[in-house]
Amino acid sequence: MENNVHLEAFAANYEVTYQLRTIDPEQIYRISHDREGKSHLAVDTLQITPHGGKRWEGEFFQGSGISGAYSTPNPDVLCVVSAGEGYLVDPLRPLEFRVLTIAVQDVFQFESTPAIVFVSFTAIAIYNGLGDIWVSERISWDGIRGIKIQADKILGQAWLAPSNEWYDFSIDLATRTVHGNRFEI
Image (cartoon, rainbow, N blue to C red; front, side):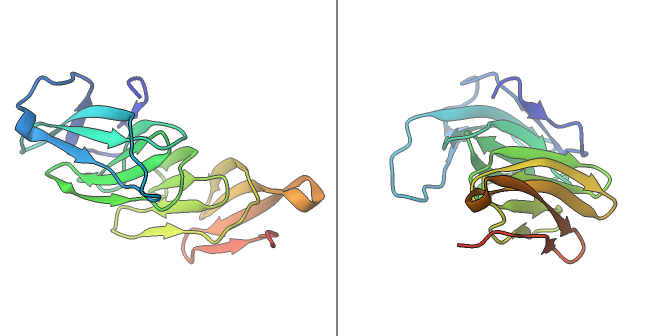
């Protein structure tokens, strides 16, 4: 994750670095969420310095997928994705974190909206910095691509396995309504 820090899209009241184990071990917080009761062996470790607070080190347990640290529309919330496991963390209160309910495969920061969009193989989650994390209904069998923002919509393509094709969909950012969804079981 070392070269995957994206703090430039939104204002941030914190800094993130990779200078490991340089602080008091009492300031190390293990931030993890385990959906399946399995042990985690690999971690991404970040050093986080909140403006006006004490520097701390976080060990973020990995799933499978991308890794990165991202600013969010809320300057007091850091997003960390550790191999697909997504966390929203208050840098001043690191043990008060929230976990994304999807396995993150891609992240998009849209300054104009403002929103940070998380893409899994089957759904999309949106965090607008106001507290809630919205997760779409399932929109794909096993793949989403071509995500972009156009005016007040998210546009993309989803995989439709029965017909072996990609189809277009959109999500209205104001109403969180998915249009063009052709996923069926």
